Length: 139
Ligand code: ATP
Image (tube, protein in one colour):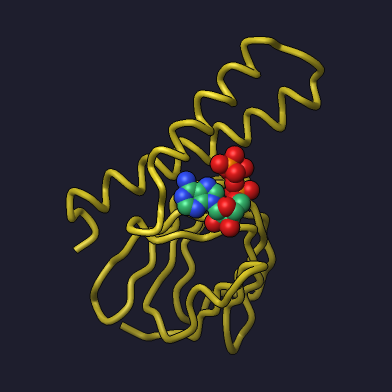
């Protein structure tokens, strides 16, 4: 399968840099798959599961809010946070989930509700990636 160059950058580090066959990214309009030769575009990322296939091996990672630029020569993804399953602190994600659920129950302003919904989405996605990773699902 044809490959393309991918770079995934967070405020802290370059999470990934190299050739891949495909990526599937959680976007605001639904999951978006990018393969070699994809038409140039930019889209917003919402917290969820990033799937990346390189050298025939598919891996999952948690990906937070961000955006992706698909260019003819490379694809660049910027995100607040991207984590492999082994780097996810499950207890922290569980606590973040409970905190967000409690805040949603208190039901304050619409803007607070929105922030807490996104925090809950991050926590759920981290827990899902962590559990898939533990099960050896990615290989
Ligand atoms: P929390 O409320 O626990 O901080 P959050 O979803 O608000 O969760 P983020 O803003 O997405 O956290 O991330 C802030 C930093 O903390 C990033 O560097 C991210 O990689 C790291 N981080 C957050 N939650 C976890 C986690 N459960 N495991 C590992 N790293 C995490």
